[in-house]
Amino acid sequence: MQLDFIHKPSGHCENGVVSNLLRFYGIEMSEAMVFGLGSGLFFAHMPFIRLHGMAVTSFRPMPGDIFSRVLSLLNIKIKRYKFRDKEKAMQVLDSLLEKGIPVGMLVGVYHLPYFPKEYRFHFNAHNICVIGKEGDIYTVSDPVVVDKCTLNYQELKLVRFASGTYPPKGRMYHISDLRDKCDITAETIKSAILKNCNRMLKIPIPMFGVNGIKYLARKMRKWERKMGSKRAALNLAQIVRMNEEIGTGGAGFRFIYAAFLQEASVFINEPRLREISIEMTAAGDMWRDFSYYAARLIKKRDSEPVTYDSLADKLVTIAHKEETIFRSLSEVCKTSRF
Image: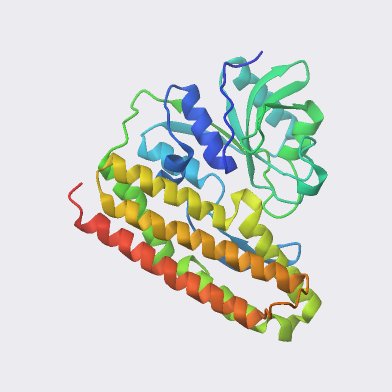
């Protein structure tokens, strides 16, 4: 049993799963448009959630949020599942596949056998789509892999119930009803942009959005004094990993959002969005620059003096840049006639 499912790789797993699922049902939408409509650009530094004993830094909203937001805007119904019983989770999956329904799900990366060992780490918010089964072998569309992959019954069950921070608990989802589907409009795009602006500018908790970047900068200045050099370097390395590797990374998300703004500027004939997309690309470059100098500090390459204070200064500059960008986007949405 193999579904007629087109596997198309993407930069980010959730964007890719959403885009590929929509294509299965005859709806063509680019990864950038999925990310933009899902208001997917974010920042959070959360000391109250720990990963490997260190505060979690995230450059995206909660897993599944992009999927929910996009399909809500399109008025497409979805169904979600979470399980305690592992065997029941697999039975429900099999029954959906037998009905010809492709199923998206959250899995842990560490035990995915088709990932190279150097890319396996304890991250439990990776999205894949299961699109077929022959015997006990499942066919998987993983958007960050070039070709379709396979997992056997035990391997799939293991990654669906990985342990650790934010365990997936068998979570899965699928499109359930498209009868009332609506098209993307200028208002749809405006709503998505304004939601992203509000997330980055108006959450009244200092750990989120633009204020979260400034919050991390303040914390970073104290790391070496409070933690010691080794622990501080581990924390910095985790920031770099989140920015450059996990789930596309913060810099990569800025580039995807810039592509969305370019696409949106054509769709709604608003040139100012294209101008802002250039600034968003520049913000992505600034995040890459931060990672470069952070890596020099971690590896103790002293040809260029790098300190936690100088890295914090870079974060403050990025925060001001992104604050300007999102205030500009908000102004465009409020004054444009689209």
